[in-house]
Length: 98
Image 1 (cartoon, rainbow, N blue to C red):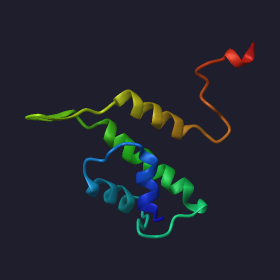
Image 2 (image 1 turned 30 degrees about the horizontal axis):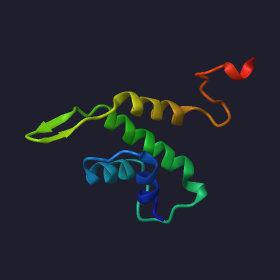
Image 3 (image 1 turned 90 degrees about the vertical axis):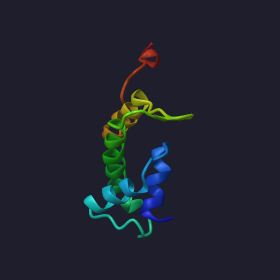
């Protein structure tokens, strides 16, 4: 698996423009064609964050019968999750405490 494939597999969203993926990788000085390994996890996570931040800002698109809608809340939750340091979960439900 390449680093580009690892990035795309993490996104769980269709990227409207492949050039956008390439730009994010180039901006971060990541060789998208290089083999992915566990050592590259942090840089791919950062690339995923950068890409999600761009995707959140994209407007919904409608042309004729075609409509593309972005779930901003879902993307923001993804960003929040990725920004959490390892071992420090975001607590949304404290029911496990009682």
